[in-house]
Image (tube, rainbow over the protein chains, first blue to last red):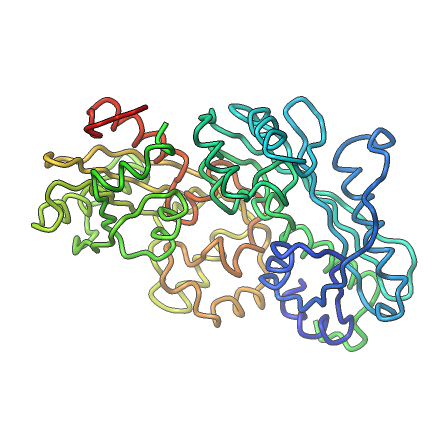
Length: 214
Length: 214
């Protein structure tokens, strides 16, 4: 398990989070990982059609973010974590951040009264390696039937504009969600449970902690 | 729908929340309901064996809380909302708040590597009525396999002691949870989506808003 060794992880691997999302930073802190944020400059312009699914696309984007940051001088000898969250509409289309209010409204009504999928891809670049280990986690999210006035109010609040799919489950849009199936924190932006387990396995298999008392 | 009429609801019904839980108060504020907290003195001592299930027990407890507050002079003419959240172990036993650290540890290992159910009962007492309308919402929560050192660390943080089932999904225990099925906010303590819909139906069927522009 990772939790009892988090202090050692923080000291030995000096983790870096290659993402500027404040929600993601909070979830990683909640996990006990003391990560420094070094935002990636990767353009997030991979060709979606080249991937088997939206989850694979998110994982590849997360890897590009992590690898870009891992090449920098200040990241040498450190664990770099990249992440990317995408919303896949009920019709199977990847929803980006909305361009404007009309775009947000269109997206929210695509989600209304239906189930869509949220994928977060995560990539870890280990000290001394150039390629990332990646995985993605998927959560199903079901919206109730949305009311036009409620949607207009939500859009007027400004909350949708920095969010893929035009909503944040942790804010005022939480009331739109009747049910989810999977990891809630994955929808917010980081799959805490899965990440914890994947990192624990990696640390053990790679012997990343020099003096491991576990 | 309720959302466009929340200002009217707040003005006409001056809602009261008959619960002292800060988490529940936050969720109700997130919903847009401006509720005054008047904590119930109900002892929460109903006989669990008298109910068909843990959800019905939670709903009845919520009703007792709401009805006690609704009888007070300061609640006359107002909408009173009661709520009660219970955790039902994988073996079907209602888990209360832990008595001490050993009790918390026992409960957390009952939840480890298994799926349990969280029920929140909600009761609404309408202005001029003595009996509450009640419902309950159920969410399934699946924990990964817990590590003893991680559990000890979590208990040492003090977080479990004011929480039924010895954990709060919104805090450091979030990493224990691999998956949920149902409403996340119901696990935190208040089923926002369901409550919104139930209140909207009640307001319409009872004509509770005197000048309804909807």
